[in-house]
Image (cartoon, rainbow, N blue to C red):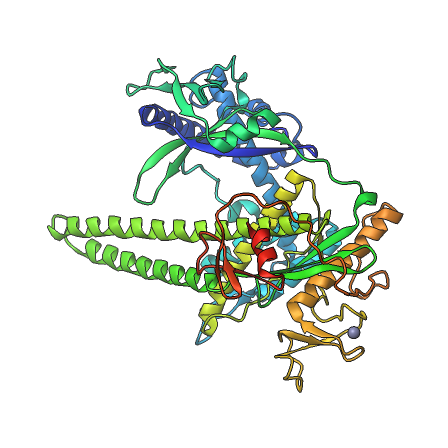
Length: 587
Ligand SMILES: [Zn+2]
């Protein structure tokens, strides 16, 4: 697939109509067998997929082998495209593993104590990876890649009591568990020899036809087109992008239900990013200790524009933790029932009863996971949309974001386990928001830059001196590292710590912006750099550049909190803006 600086692919999946399911699933089963055989055969050549990446993946696979089970030339090309892409991904992970292999140490493992089983020592891991990464001068994404292989290596340690010797020991051959077939190896929508796809925009449908084996295992083209109604969002995108070869995929639910979906892939042009000289304002966003996100806009003259914005995930964390507990309980039940069933003699009448209950429980677990993930995704979308919108209404063309590397605990939840759950879920959500933001910024033409958070919540945004945080504005006897109130001894400025941190992130963003304008060289500053200027706030420029109000479902208002439709009781947005302004902002 062509991915470039100027284009990006968008994917929309559509479940195939029932009449095409049986054929599609047979095709995917056949594909999976071939792909997996090829993966096993090529696994010893993994390194070569890391060194050479030019050209389509299927060509590279073709250099080593022909189809282990031939069902047509283009069918094999499509299958080998899947194989090649998987191997290229794995080869990248292997490189990441080779980078971290020398730093894997027992220090990464937290030994068993009375209260907690053995686990990963995340602060130590984070520090080690950060140090390693500094020596590499690589970007954000590779931190995640490095962390990912370290996590996997630690899991290996728990099973084998030692770290893996090489990547192949760590990673089994990544066989496909469900079928997947990209048609990118074929000759296109009109001339394809494994599939055809034609759009009928007037009727708003796609005509899809594909080759597959029948029940007897004979391959042939389907006798009729599969008619797929085009989803709304796809129709909107079509005029502005190029339709790429689709991917046929199998989805499998925990209760055993399988179905085939077709991924429509549209490559759209990214919006041109604004010229640096036209950027005047920066929106600084900080992963809060108390709120999920805090954002403040600052202009290039170091004047804060507009009021800060807090996104509090409120009772959301509690709900997610409850769902996780529910899943754990169900898993325990499943384990117990399995054990009890297996203890029964082969022909025992109660076995069927157990099997029935197990199916029910597994379905319930699947439902819980889906609910859990859906909520996370929805929150991530809401948060990233709000931030993008805030940047727009404040006239900011640069979004300065605290880097993902820091994961602060929220301090919410009861006891270590509860806190740990929130912490874990918060890191998932942050990752999700970060990805969505980067993607949305590219899509609409906002500059996006991440800043190192060191010192951002312990520096006074008004005079730039180091400052301490305290439990509350009135309790200033003892400084508390995670305290929610910041007080500056140098200039007596004080304020909410998350707010101060977001202003500081914006200050870093401004320093970065000024450098880009003057020297054209990208260089991030640290908090103590004299180029990072203090910010003042007079309330001028607080008027939002709001879009005109249209007709939309109004958020529900109760007191000072306004709930976004569909978000009742799960997340709330808080702002010091007047209610009417705030409601328009969320609309
Ligand atoms: Zn100060």
